[in-house]
Image (tube, rainbow over all chains, first blue to last red):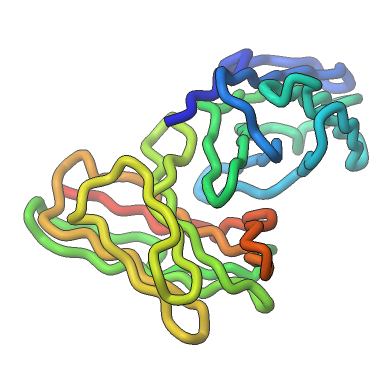
Amino acid sequence: GQQLNQSPQSMFIQEGEDVSMNCTSSSIFNTWLWYKQDPGEGPVLLIALYKAGELTSNGRLTAQFGITRKDSFLNISASIPSDVGIYFCAGQINYKLSFGAGTTVTVRA
Amino acid sequence: ETGVTQSPTHLIKTRGQQVTLRCSSQSGHNTVSWYQQALGQGPQFIFQYYREEENGRGNFPPRFSGLQFPNYSSELNVNALELDDSALYLCASSLTGRGGDVETQYFGPGTRLLVL
């Protein structure tokens, strides 16, 4: 199946810093999504992108759908302690979501 | 909260047993997808149910099967459990439109299955 390469695998950041993570694929997707998962819970949708080149914000989060439709990035500005968690990118084509392996974010107070 | 509920929250089984996991979709949604998430990995697509039929399947053996009911809720059944089936099982609900496009998927909290 499709494989998404998500990087970095993990990051330690200082509170107040900006964070960037990205996802690349060898396959084209119609939709890119970013989810956050806290321990013991299911993934929660952060941002959905439906069109190549689209740049969308949700509060301190900004994500872009790459022009080639094979990549996406997520930025978190001015990180706070509750940003801790695992962030997953997912590409969707038809009915199926393919996920990256996740980026674990730990915030240093 | 997404409105997607799953039961049970945790389950312990032994190798060779069978298990049934349940999912209630979000109000207004007609499609349920199931995912397996092993520790430290992203969710892997198992299958999707729409109109009470399997609408697509990932790379999982036939001992993984499912059902969808008229109220759009769904079950995931796994027969002949293996140790590697230990994982978090997630269901996601979405709306499939008349054109067949599957809209954004919203996840439930998952069922943690441990196979001993």
